[in-house]
Each structure stands twice: as structure tokens, then as C-alpha cells.
Image: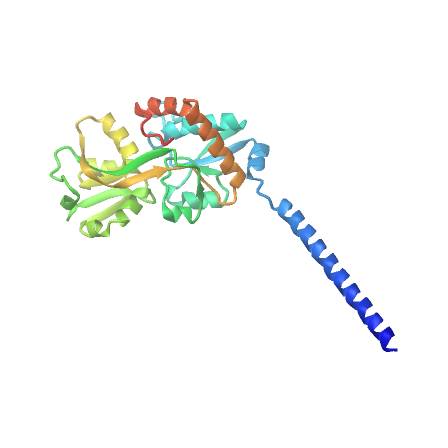
Amino acid sequence: MFSNYYKGENKLKRKFILLALTAFIATTLFSGCASKQTKDSSLADIKAKGKFVVGLDDTFAPMGYRDPDTNELIGFDIDLAKEAAKRMGVQVEFKPVDWAGVVMSLNNKDIDVIWNGLTITADRQKEINYTKPYIKNSQMIVTLANSTIKTKADLSGKVVATQLGSSSVDALNAEPAVTKTFKELKKFDTFTTALTELKAKRADAVVIDALVGNFYMAKEPGAYATLKENFGEEQMGVGVRKTDETFLAELNKVMDAMKADGTADQIAKKWFGTADILIK
């Protein structure tokens, strides 16, 4: 009787182990299938759509802005994005957006990339991913040519202007010991408006991306001056959603190729007269 009892108990144990093993195998297979189903398809989606959409501030010369004669979008980043799209076998669409909300536009899928002199910052990296850095920049301080402002210390009691939502704001915020001495920090929708305020003497200085500031100063020789000091060096990259890993990998691949074969150098020389700004 006891022998039969133990035999029955062993059968139950074997059956339990078999059921547990079956359940484990089924769970593993399901997890594998689920993993395959949830694999990032961002590049495949772009290919299927036949294009990627670039979000930009269309006043951000010389990175991306409108030709005053034709209203066509032109610029350094415009040319880079067109070349990248060509190499990927897709089209590129440019969509002007509110720069202060550009990261939201990306994560809401209104656009596919931010390609417009986008500075790499720690705060943005919490919300989006970047390609490898491709261009270097600094936050320059611009005044009128006859200004008495020669150093950051001279900004004390002065009105300083910049662009809302730009990395210039981040750079200023990183130096509170300086900014707290300002009479006022004015933030405008565009850098061009900030420069207009400077010309109208409603601002005493403008903190601006050097790439942009040098472009506008070249248009009016002798009108502006720059300080030797700045609000920091920085690097720029193309912004993509954190989920879009395959698309990001492809962008890095084509941009590396553009640097390697000299195409990026040619585009840089066209807009800046030098390729020294590129990060290779």
C-alpha cells in the first residue's frame, strides 16, 4: 500500500516538473516572438514612407533659412539633409516648427528629425538621441561696433537679448553669476529679432550661436563687434527619437560616408569658406 502511494507521488512530481518545463519553454518562445515583433522598425518605416521630415527654424541662417529672393529653403544643414536622404534612397521634407517646442514636435511624430544646428545638451539628451557630433560652435557675444562693452563683466546693468528655446539660453543659465547682473535678459522667437533689437538699441548685446552670428555680421561689415569671451564651446548633432535606433544608425552611417569622401567638406566650404568647423 505504501509502495503504491510513493509511486503515485513520484508520478505527480514528474507530471508537475514536465508541466513547469513546458510552461518555461512556452514563455521563452513567446518572449522571443514578442521581442521580434517589438524590434525597432524606424528605418523600415522611413523607407516605406519614402521620406523623412526635418523640423527646423527657417530663419536660422546659414543652417536653414529662406532665400530672400525665391523664398526657397537653403543652408548648410539643408544641403547635408538632402545629400543624406539621397544616399538613403528617400526624399526629404522640410517643416518649419516653433523652435521652443521642437523636441515636443519630434516626440509627437510631427517630424522625424531635428536637423538645424541643434546643440547637444544634457537636458535634451534626456528626451532625444543624437547622431555623432558633426559640427562645432560657440556662444558668442555680439555688440554694436561702437559699444563700450568689452568683457562679460561689462554686461552688468545691461539688456541682453537671445533666442527663446535656443542653446544660448542654456549657456546663459549655466553662468548665473554673470546673468544675475543683467538689467534684463530678453528672449525672442528668432535670433534675427534679437539682432534687430540690438540695432535699434533696445538691447546692449546679443548672445548667439557663432555660426549664425558670423553669417549676419558678414552681411553688414563694420556694424557689429564681438567679445573675446564667450558663453562656452559646444557641439551639434541631428536629433532623433529615442525609439528610432535603426534610423539613427543609418544616419550615422551616411554622415560618416559624407565626411570620408569629402562631400561634407565641400558643403562646409560653400557656406562657411572652411571645413574646419566639421567634427570628423
